[in-house]
Image (tube, rainbow, N blue to C red):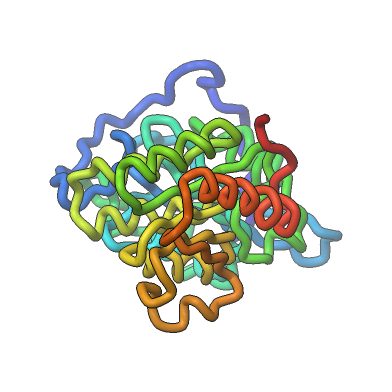
Length: 325
């Protein structure tokens, strides 16, 4: 399949994207993962280096089943219990037949939904000679058949719909070498913290302290008040770990999340009652900073949290350029 050159720019550059009038398949709340009313989705920017070129890149786009003439990057809804990067790979294959390793996490894009985007270097496309691809899991009623094509970055911009151009810009801002690295968020101008566990008073104190110096990710509060099932909560937290600069966990009941964060190279602070309450081997993990609550005053605890954010996250990780003072 060769790259395509559209004949003209989008006929609706400043207007709403027209729809084909197809109905969406009905879904119950039990199979939907939402954060503050927004459905969580995951997708990729599938890309390849053009043979014989000096670093020229093409991206693989799909045509919207309900928006003929408008193209987008493959993405779809997160299933309860599903880790967000696995969802990105699954949806990419289902929607366009592309396969390859995930690389850099490119960020979160919000409109009516909340989409987590990764780069994917394509190593294989199923039935690549065919322009049309059948997506049996399409969210719209009908045949589920859509077009797919390789585009240069310039021509892709002219046909991408909604937040597609912003996604393309995030992708193009990363060097080819960095695209191949499976890493979390790129450096940003402020600290984003995920806080999980703990009683209401202790959580509020830590939340208030950190909120004055950075941004508390919405999953922190949403998980505490959510009535969603455990599988839905897992999907929300696992997604938030990709955008967090630091994770602060309070109590032994969140040890599983601590292990997840450490495996994802997310700087992690565990506030545990005593060494005896910690899960097996967790105290020996050098990726996790531990502070014990027993015998520690609230003033001393907040001071330790501040020391951790400055010295461990800011100075050692060097992924954040500033904190609010």
